[in-house]
Image 1 (cartoon, rainbow, N blue to C red):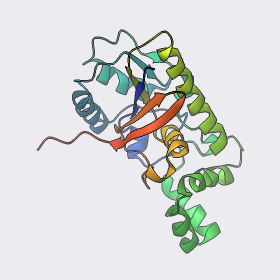
Image 2 (spheres, helix red, strand yellow):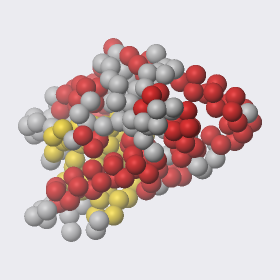
Image 3 (cartoon, rainbow, N blue to C red):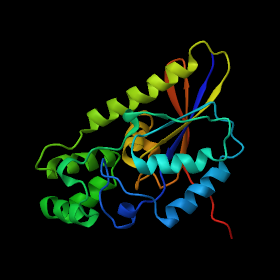
Image 4 (cartoon, rainbow, N blue to C red):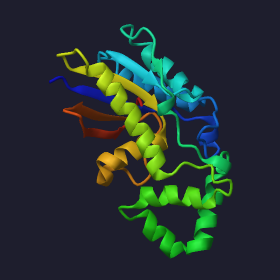
Length: 224
């Protein structure tokens, strides 16, 4: 039985990331820092032979994907998959991160807020916060975003494994919260407190219809 090796990449830093604003279906281009870190990640992955690549439909992920695949002539053209797009923040899109923190501290108290964010359920708590503060009720739920990304990755793995007796390396370029939702589902204790860094790569194997975490939140080192 062939194993599908997923390389799950979060895009490079964007202008909205640098400004400390929520960025889900809103989009912005990579900063100079984001481009440089994506180039470092591309060099880190240069020796991996990819059998296929899939990318979110959002521009920041596609920009990151182009930088990585420039060093991989074996990839003719990445497949765009809407299922890989970022968490939808609803009416909170573009909101400053610090405004979110202040609102939660005001409602729960700083002690309770810190306790929740340090607990094992911190990721579920974070998404609950977004839903509770979004007055438009347009923000995705934990169940909704988890089902979406899990279904997308399972579909990709099933497609890539059909009629194949050989292991495959598949590049996935997506986003921080949606990839965190997937990793939280399969290995909640391993998800970093501050979630996934820009231009990080996490490795997950798919075999016998099961996902297994191999590495998480690995980032390329800066040159001395």
